[in-house]
Image (cartoon, rainbow, N blue to C red; front, side, top):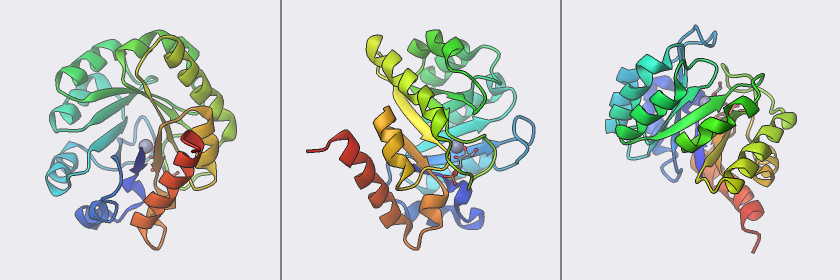
Length: 219
Ligand code: DX5
Ligand code: ZN
């Protein structure tokens, strides 16, 4: 699945920017609070409005403190997936339970400097693992190949445990790096700059999908 990140879009024209990628699978929405990360973006009211402005499933990535308090609101607002950061959550299992009960998939995100091993036991409670391939906070950074070890680990772990788990990569994904991420076992690819800095964002989504598909289904 290709999930364009509206962090790289024009925030004054979000409905149009969503329409420009109508062939995408999810629309990735970065929620930042200037505490968990230094940057500040949007919150629940914008997600509620966006829900009415596009039919694309909304993939909410919460880079915020106190996800225990806020995550459920995004699920209730109709997000398809709500990812919280392992570093910020007090009780990730309870958040996952609440998010799922509200009808969304539950995602567990790990930032650049966070190992995945301590969280493997939590994965049966989650639907998505979001592996940051940059340091969370800003778009337009360079992809860090070494972080794909976490993607490999997540994919190995989910296969051996018979879990149905999306492994999502976020940060620096373009038509080159998506190949390495797909080879490592990712199946959801977030792309901000590579989509919205392109002349035709819709075509950029198709090009990314073709690159990932060539790895995942070479026939
Ligand atoms: C950064 C965000 C990403 C960001 C990726 O913390 O989580 O979703 O939009 O942007 P690019 O694709 O430009 O690296
Ligand atoms: Zn993100």
